[in-house]
Image (cartoon, helix red, strand yellow):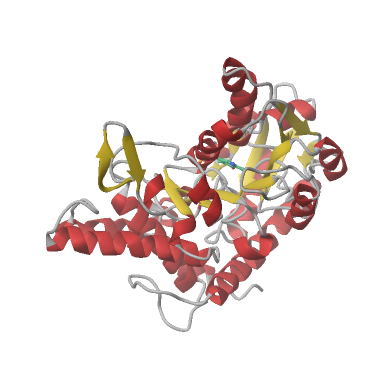
Length: 435
Ligand code: PLP
C-alpha cells in the first residue's frame, strides 16, 4: 500500500469515463478537470502581462509572476530569477545552446550520452557539426556509451571529460530504459574537469534533462547543484505548452538571451546603438508568453500536492509560498505509488515468453520491451484494440535504440502516472500477453 487514494484521484479526471487505460504517460499526462476549468475562470480578467495599467493586466501579471515563484519553490530554486519559461524541454535545451554559443572556444568539447532524448543530443550535434564550424571553431561532441543494462557508462563518461569540457549534458531519467544516472557522480565528474569558464569558475557546467525525472521524484536544484535543469509541464498533469529551464542565477545574468525582442529589454532602454536588457527572469522572456498556460502549469503543482494530500492546507487556487517539504512529500508519495505499479508490471511482463525488457531493474516508472516475432508497432496497435495505450517507436531515444542494435530502432513502451491503478497494469500486461 502506498497511501494514495487512487480512486479519489481518478475522480478528478475525465479519461476514466471512457474506459481508456492510459499507460503512455511518459509522452504526456492527462489534465485534471480543475486545470481545464481554471482556464475558463481566468477569462473574465484575460489580459496581457507587463503591458498595461488596467486592473485586469495588473491582476494577470500578479498571477503570472506568482506562478514563477511556485515553480521555483517546487524545485527549491533560490528565486524566480533562476527560471526561463518556454514551450517545452526541447526549447530549454536550445536556450542553453544558444545562450552559450558565443562562449565556446576553439578546441572545447561537449560531453553527452547515447541515452539522450534527441532534444538533448541534436542541439549539441548541430552546434558542434554545423554552427560552430561555420564560425571557424572546432568543438567536439562526445557521447558516452551505455552499459549492458542500458545505463550510461559513467566511467566511460568520466574518461571523455577533460579540461576542454565546457558542458556535460545528461538525462536525469531515460524515457527508454528508465535508467536514472547518479546526479552526484555527474556533478563530481563535472567539478573535476578544471575547465575555465568565463565566470572564472573551474569546472564543467552540468545540464540535466529532467523531462522524465522531475515528474517522477523531488528534485532539489540546490542540493543536486545542477547548473541547468529542464522539464515540461505536459508530463506533469498540465495541458500542453509550457516548459521550464532552471539555471543558476549568475549563469543567466552572464549568459546571452536565446530570444530577443519586447519585454526582455529594460523599460525605455533601446537606442540605435545600445540596448539594455530587463532584470531576470524577464531578460529571457521575449515577446508575449503563454500567460494562462504558465498560471495553469504552476497550479498543476499545487493541485498535485492536494491530490496526494501532502500539504496541511489546500494549495490549489491559491498563491504564495509553501515549504519545500510539500514537494518532497508529494513526490515521495507519487514515486512510491508509481514504483509499485512499475514493479508489478515488470514482474508480470518478465514472465511472458519471448519478451525482452530494456533497462535496469531500478527505473523511472516506464517499461520498454520487444517481443520476438512481433514488431513493436503491431504490438502497440494490438494493445490499443484492447483499450490499452502504449507507444511504439524509438521515443526520440534514437541513439540508444541503435546502441542496443534494435532493428527497426523501436520498442513498445508502457508508462505510469499518479492516476494509474493496479487494474491498469493488469489489463496492460494481459494485452501484451495476448498481443
Ligand atoms: N527529454 C526526455 C527524456 C523526454 O522524455 C522528452 C519527451 O518525451 C523530452 C526530453 C522532450 O520533451 P518535450 O517534447 O516536452 O520538449
